[in-house]
Amino acid sequence: MNATMTIMRSRRLALAAAVTLAAASGGCVEFSGPGLDNNPNSPTQTDINTQFTGFQGYQFANLTGDENRVISVWMRHMAGTSRQWLQLDAPYLNGENLFGNWNNFYANGGLIDIRGVQAKARAAGDQVYLGIAQVWEALLMGTVADYWGAAPYSEAVGESRTPKYDSQREIYAAVQRLLDQAITNLAAAGNGPGAFDLVYGGDKARWTAAAHSLKARYFLHVADYPAALASAQRGIASPAGDLRTYQSATEGEQNQWFQFRRQRGTDISAGKWLADLMAARNDPRLPTYFGPGSGMTTINAAGPGEEGETFSWLSAQRADPAFRQPLVTWAETQLIIAEAQARAGNAAAALEALNRVRTGAGLAAVSGLTGNPLLVSIMEEKYVSLFQSSEVWDIYKRTCYPNFPLQNGATAIPMRLVYGSNENGANRANVPTPEPRRNEVNPRVVTSIDGTPCRGQTS
Image 1 (cartoon, one colour):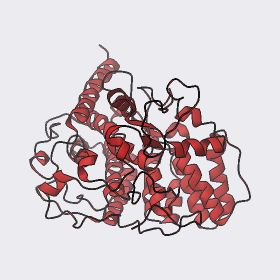
Image 2 (cartoon, one colour; image 1 turned 180 degrees about the horizontal axis):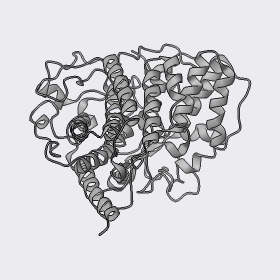
Image 3 (cartoon, helix red, strand yellow; image 1 turned 90 degrees about the vertical axis):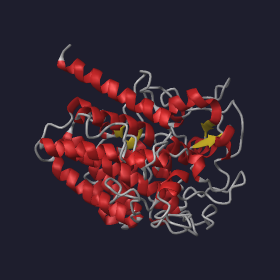
């Protein structure tokens, strides 16, 4: 067996084991208790490549798993059409509704393991490997801040069984510093993971661009538009550079949306809000997002609270077991540039970035827009282009766009995830109480960016 075949076999075994663990555990390992010290991936004993491959596999499943689907339903990219998913538009969820996945960002192939990879990279003097692992940590913990706001970070890995909660702004600031370190390390010496990197194959330039795009994302989340613009302009430069999950048709490596459909049937279907918007735009991406309804030749999308088994699912492309889910993309990066330029009053530059995405998708360029109409056009394009991305939730939290009506008994559109019973039990002294309804950087928006009263942010 040659070296390439050996690498491929070992990484497949590690990936399959990690994804199987992700599917089986459901986040059952406690973050703030004994699970912190007894990580099943044995970070002190596993070699760096196996640990890194396992981490990647677990996080591919985690970042495109339950939270991602919940947010897709809340943001009406998708619709819950059966069982507990039918009720996801209803009043605010408790922790039990989210399957304990908070833990998956820390234990079970989360922060503990990526810190283990970093420690091994430092010991080996491989700064490139270290830089890649740091970008991964930034994505992981930036997502935690997006979803939950305040969370353990500075004390999350170590001796404390009751780590303190850092504020959302503190986490974002720490993530920015980490990304700066990653960019420096990626320009230094080291062989990196090579073929064990399931995203870019160890390509330093692509990881550096992705790090800049992530910096732009998190600057945008705190409304630092000049910094977001500067970072985005150094970010992912083409769709070929998108940071995507690794998936294949091999059992255990299939994309999470494929696995969900196979296991849960018609619990989730195409969302009517997005499908109708795309149809009105004559958007050529619509049939690449959704397939026809069961027994139909046309797309049949569901609204909030509509139950049934004939609604559309994802397209054949998106539902394919080997479809690589986008996590950080060129389109997102360009639309950050567009928003930042628009907010600075640079309409021509904003339109140029917006139209790069539109024309790349097969849509006509737009012209003559300034001020709020320009921002609305950018947000609409973000909402469509970032299909199945949790980033559309950030648009809503900052701008109340789209300005969804409250339906299916909802009293508000949820503005954050809740911590869940595991964390409330294991680290109760530090869990913010009463638990907030919204995060620090997202005050209530009273008027949508489209100029109408915001209907879903009611408290």
